[in-house]
View 1: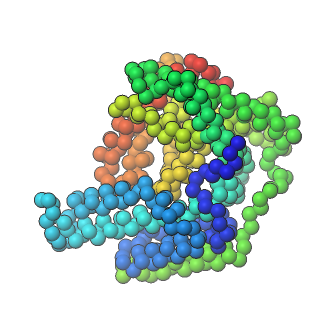
View 2 (view 1 turned 30 degrees about the horizontal axis):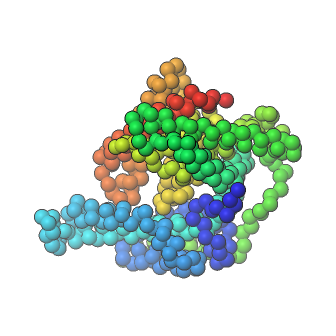
View 3 (view 1 turned 90 degrees about the horizontal axis):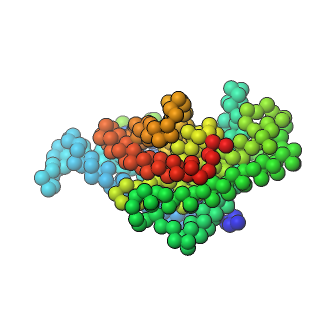
Amino acid sequence: MNNALIIGQYVPGESLVHRLDPRTKITVIFFFVFIVFLANSVVSYSVLVIFALLSMFITRIPIRFILKGLTPVWFLIVFTFILHLIVTNKGTVLMDLFGFSIYSGALIQGFAISIRFFLLILVTSLLTLTTTPIEITDAIEDMLHPLKKLRFPVHELALMMSISLRFIPTLMQETDKISKAQASRGVDFRTGPLKERIRAVVPLLVPLFVSAFKRAEELAMAMEARGYQGGEGRTKLRELKLRKRDVMILLLFIAVVAVLLVTRNY
Amino acid sequence: MDKTISAAPSRISIGELTKISLVAALYFAVTASFAVVGFGAVQLRFSEMFNYLALYNRRYVIAVTLGVVFANFLSPTWFLDVPIGGLATFVVLLICRAVTRHIKNEIAKIAVTAVIFAVSMFTVATQLTILFDLPFFYTWLTVGAGELLSMTIGGMVVYFLGKKIDLSK
């Protein structure tokens, strides 16, 4: 099994952002997604850009990793910008281009939406870049704890997430192995009539499902044999603890929100 | 094998819990390995195919939802895709199960599910409208049409898969 295979974009590190409690990071990012939509002026956007760039700098993650995360969305950002240039007709006419009038309002709106989207991608990617999936699972379990009173199976959900994360690398490797094995037997779902090609996918999926079910049964048996009992009273290998640095970051974020609210319309 | 977790009263047995986890992991593995397979002009997104599993057993509603949540974390716009995609998948799968409950014909079940999923693409259209100010109805129509085609191919794959494996157990 390839344990080195990392799911998502996590980049190991020892920066302040890496060491923050995952609940702090999720809380800050959750509210950041909303406050981005409050920015409506050059100054308020600047406040958010400074916050985003500062956060990025603190993570000490090489810029190439961050830019790699942005690669799939450059096209969308440019497309939206051009679309706004064509569709929006607010403000004064700046120039005529290929029969289209470019308005000042269109330029401003195109920039604003592009920057908003860029900020969202940049800041939210900092969570997945600095937090392991298992840390995110632990944080989600803890944050959903109040739902236990409504009989929501929080512990079971967290356990399912943890088991899935443990088996994703194993099953990815198995998927690769089976697809290569089937290809060597001449299975080809890229040529031939449509119905035949669809049928050709099935021999790939059957062993995958059979293997997944077999592993599930073996795991359940192993858990029962060891007397697994879920829910209350279980101790944890990884305890989450809010530290001084988490409080500092939360206070800093509140300050950013306050500055943003004050600088709106400037 | 399927004994319930004894200490805390749980509605999920250990056997069910591990099957849900493994199918969620399989969803991620297959989706990440073969994101898109072209069938001429039509494409099969393997992830769409998994949606039909919910018709065979209730456990797959949770399994597929978890798989969607994991897979959506890979998206640059995960902050929208994870909560909206996860919740929408969960709700739409429950709707599909409820609507197709009394339909006996397997192909009819698959066809109804494909249409429900195509209609449910208003969630993606809403996301695109919020993020990029795109026209809602035009976006819904184009995304929904793509989804319907992909779901049709996926439905055929699951139909043949169901002939080989008992997915209801």
